[in-house]
Image (cartoon, rainbow, N blue to C red):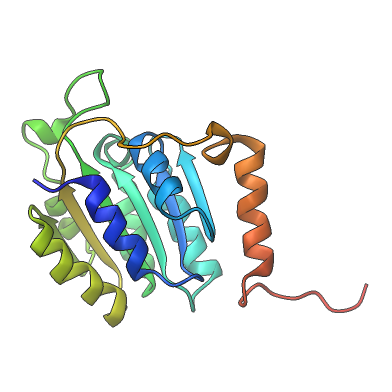
Length: 197
């Protein structure tokens, strides 16, 4: 199993300032907000919404890498999003699913018993998939995906545990987070500039 915080630390060092990221609720959002405080980051999407939201951003910003940092519990609520993502096949979308096999402290998810999210993604038609169990694997496959482009989907089997850091909740959800995200998009080099008016 890999450590979520360590992998996110590596990911933050690999992304340029113009990459766009989206996270599901929970430890993913807290650790990512701490590790990547600047840039177009949308945090704490409700369960089942992370991958679909990232898909929309990948279509709106086709020249930029979009990274979805999802969780097993979130994706299991909307596995049909994998079919939609595969059908659109955006070349700039990377999906990382942090699979700790549980809904926080509320009990196990289906990945703890029989569900295989990589197999579901592969069956949906996503061209590049994988299940990552070591940090060496993460270092090998994720930078390659970021450099090569193309739609890719990786499940990270992560160690259980709470977020290693705490951040101001206003950075994670609500109006302040959304306004910061929009401000970053407005400054984004690919944002369509309005002429006249």
